[in-house]
Length: 235
Image 1 (spheres, one colour):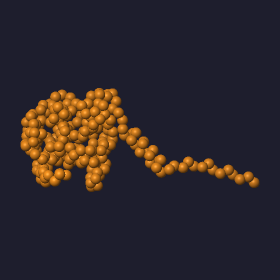
Image 2 (cartoon, one colour):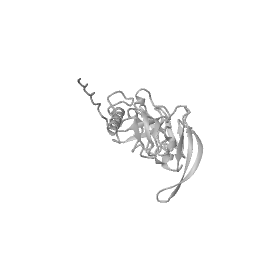
Image 3 (cartoon, one colour):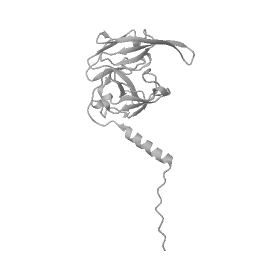
Image 4 (cartoon, helix red, strand yellow):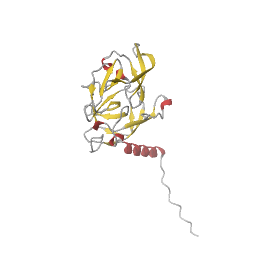
């Protein structure tokens, strides 16, 4: 009586190899170069990579987004619609190759934007500005500084917190700027520590073609209570 041949051996997968393959597939699906298109954030003129995942390396958007946060973004969200006041946007500027910024849209084309004593004005009218709290911070050198936190409410009812350390600082007292067609005025929520449209020679107004991704979720944070926090929800 002949014995049946043994079944063919099943391929063995090592767990690290499988995990590596999954990670590679996710990264490959998430990261891509901007390709040629129109001027709605989908143009090949912007020399940057837009992806689903961003790690924040500065405090310019605190308290909304904190240093060290990992953000999940809706890729190319602004390829199909224009940004609105209060939207969080991912920017890649030709003047800063290799750097990706996250800022908040404040002024649309045609708007007149100004800051006075730390308060935001749109088209000559003050934006609602409600005090939340004040705090004293100590730097690594031991020097103490005070800042105040306010809730700003834009005309379209989008609300968000901003930090203002010195209402007398030049960044908190600007000339009125009228936003030309095809450009946007953006600010950081941490007003005294943000490179943004208040600095014409260093940052300036943002071309429409530089806006593509929209941050939507805090995927990871040192503050575990912030994990899963949704960003930029409309009222």
